[in-house]
Image (tube, rainbow, N blue to C red; front, side, top):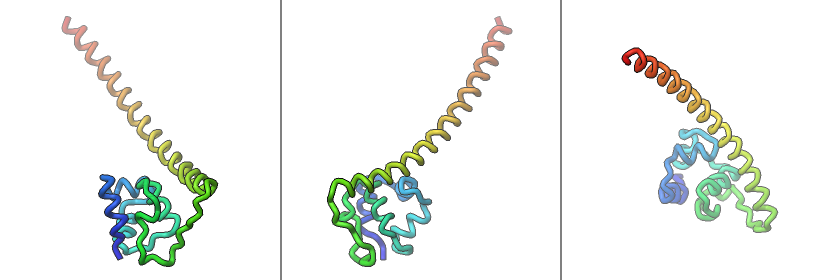
Length: 127
């Protein structure tokens, strides 16, 4: 069964399936199957989706999935533990993405520097 609440919150936040999938550490096809109700959403995935969408789990959780237990433990320690592990995973993903982006920028800078040298030599020859 399609996860209407999950989809509505995602759309309200202005996020694509691809963006939620990346932030949830899965590919878009997998996320799409979960949102469309083709694949089961695990308890950890529900928690990740809630964290990514920055909403309480109860706002996205679908009643049809009674096999998944939602913890009502509101103690500060339980929130810190859940958030810290997700934060660590998110940080690794973000750091890896930033490394790749920096490498791309460095390659572009090298290309532009070579282009500048060529243009300077061309200008000097024409003078």
